[in-house]
Structures are given as structure tokens and as C-alpha cells.
Image 1 (tube, one colour):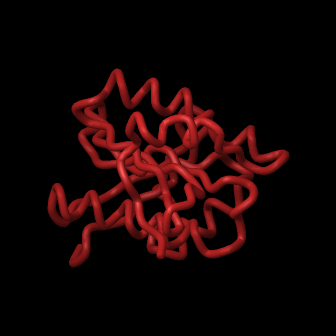
Image 2: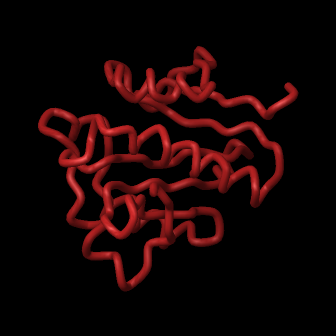
Length: 148
């Protein structure tokens, strides 16, 4: 069963050992860099390990982007050994549920690097749409609050 659990001392090394597939490195930052951001933005960053039962298969970080005043899917990756097995979509839904359970029925934003068609299709499959804004080499996508 897929679940998300906070990154802790007990699972930190396993999270740091996760790797994307060859050629995907240009689309995501390392989990070490993500966790350093989570540390600095500890009041607004929510890093989670993605599990299949007790096996770590990925990493997701949700957050609140104070500069723009919105909630975000900040970082997301599935380890290369576990890609194309359905973990991404399930984990993404859990991350979105976390934000809405904690903060209410809010819009959620993310960015996707142009050319990362796999991620874009995944985000679109759960309802994200492009806003048309490209900033810092990222295409902004928005998942509207239910009822908008």
C-alpha cells in the first residue's frame, strides 16, 4: 500500500540514496538539495518519503510559497527502480490530499521543466493545467480548488 511519511532521522539515508533514471537529472534537483530547502523553510515545507508498505520508492515535498502566496507541489521524484509502476500518481494524490487536509480547499501550483513530458502528463492526469507562465525555466501549472 502506498503511503507518504515525514522524512526523519530513521529514513533520511534511504531518502538521500534515491535516484531518478538516466537523463532525468536535468528535470529535478537532488533530494539533498530539497531537504536543505526544507530545513531553511521548515515552517512552510513538508518533505515526505513515499513508501510501498515499508520500502521507500520516492520523495515528495509540498509547501507554501510565501513570495507568491500559494501552496505548491515543491519537489517530486520516484526512484528509477520503481518508475512506471503507478507509484507516482498514487503518491501525488496523497501529497495533494495532505495540503487540502491541512490548509483547506486551496489551489495548488507546481512547475515543470519544459520537455519533461512525463511529469506534465502525470500532473495533468490529476487535474493540473498550464497557467501559461514560464518563470525560472519552469512552466507553471495549477490545480484549482474543487468548486472553482
